Image (cartoon, rainbow, N blue to C red):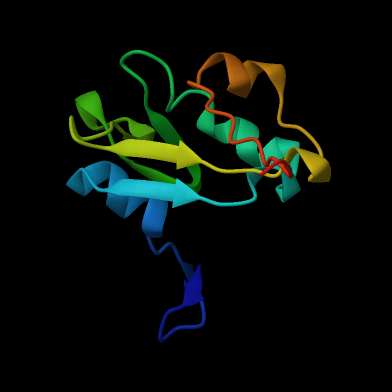
Length: 110
């Protein structure tokens, strides 16, 4: 959020919203260092027919001129990649259940 000319906070879409709308691939590194409450907001995005509810962006006119929170539905080409070092902790089981895990194991053998 930034301030407008009148000194009021104004919502500005970030990289996640842009990637979702334009079908970009997005890599989130060190996700296990992110607070669980923040990362868990992505659970709904990773669901089949997922979406992101932007309640922080305020309300906008919805159906029948009712005020509604903004909902972002991902573009069909949008992809989300999460990278983490398990030495720094874990992510929630709910998020792990929505992902395909690939483990890269470092070997000291030659």
